[in-house]
Image (cartoon, rainbow, N blue to C red; front, side, top):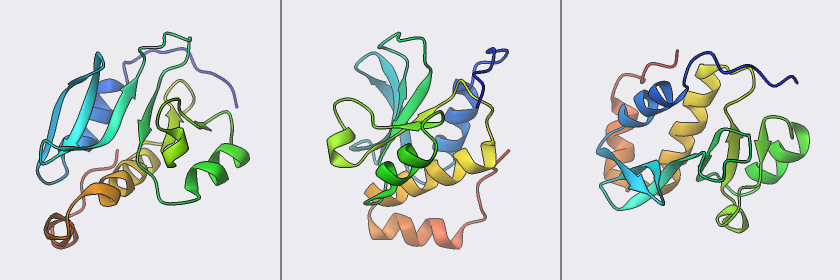
Length: 131
């Protein structure tokens, strides 16, 4: 997979996906935009603060997903520092993106940390836009 030249900042689209989920808030954490469920539990954090020439995000993931995706597609997925040992998934944003897939990854991250009441609300609401 080829790196792509960043022609548009992916942050607005990532923000849109995260904030479409019930009771999600955004604030800076460690200098980066981070999304929380009920202002307490992190489920996605933008990852550009290491300035390692790679742009991405880190998110909660079901057991085994990080290992599987990072092994199958290392150009798109990785084990992030600090939270990788807890199974979090790193997703590069400097490759060709399929926003529908990114939306699914973001929603799964949300499902990993959201309480049952919010999951029930999510399951009965119309699907968030995955552009």
